[in-house]
Length: 307
Length: 141
Image 1 (cartoon, each protein chain N blue to C red):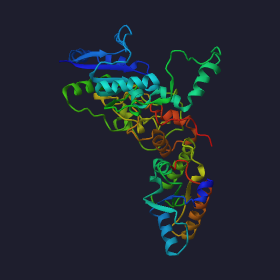
Image 2: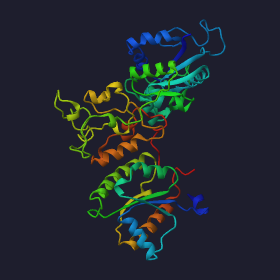
Image 3: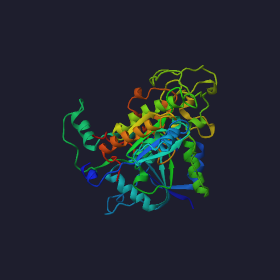
Image 4: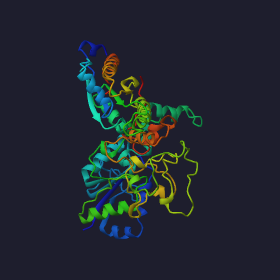
């Protein structure tokens, strides 16, 4: 019998669902082994029965549950709890579900500040009241899935990689364990490091120095070239079987989308330590909290403390 | 803070002292019978340059009221430039304390040589008093 699969999406762009599609040919083999029972992005399965006849929300039981997106409203919270009840193995798909992702940058402000900015103060907006009819209330901040329900497996990345999704699903279906890499992006990065910056801090839009066509292992480390590369504090794995991290392959510094190396790590502190050690001026780093927690804001970013 | 004073607030001070200068300085303070507050807990590290910002931030968010990082005087470092590294990191730590809502005065970087026992005792006394005036760390339960 095919394993049943349920999927839900919360505060997310939908990119991680595209990643599932992006698995390509191996997806055809995978689809033979799973039966999708609930997936709002793909199929019409309503929560309160197809004609709204039921009084209680219902998601069918499933062996595998996938959830993408962080928790931003009361509706997300209820759905996450319902998914947990119905799914044997619950997987957080993508950095939003794992660490809050981009939407969690909003944790730098209070919900009130956000609403006021968006619905009242924004120049291009008609100054209306806040929307309140028939919509679920916002939570006080963006939560990662694991802060609300127990999560069995996280697949980070923005978006996560097709190889990783396919690998995890195949492992689950075959009853094998699946583990994430525990090294940092720097461990898989081929560029040359000499632990000393050769340039002052540079803007992201400036081009790095490299010889076009030459292999990456002849290029100098991005941090030492003065770019804010999140490699030292970011989990590796985005390179998949190719090894070399995705952004590095494209001559771009790491954005940090695979999130911190451990649940308890604080990427900002790690990065500030790494950057000041190679000799970059920590005072010049713009917006450090958001820059270094770009994908891991849930539980790490908060409104600036008032003294 | 008022409450803390009533209860007799005793700050927990963590001193990270480098093996070659500051720890010997602390030793000398002991041998010379210099008095300094018992609030100070010294951890010996091989070099002030090995003190990662994580150690300081973790200490301040998990129970310490003040952290003082001691290393050799500039140009005296046993590893040549460890204390300069510490200086750059201290700058980053001071910046991050704002993000964590911790008063900057709870952290200090100081140079103490092996022959400066009395100076070590004076530094610790002054820093403990400074932290005592600030009251308990905002992260204290």
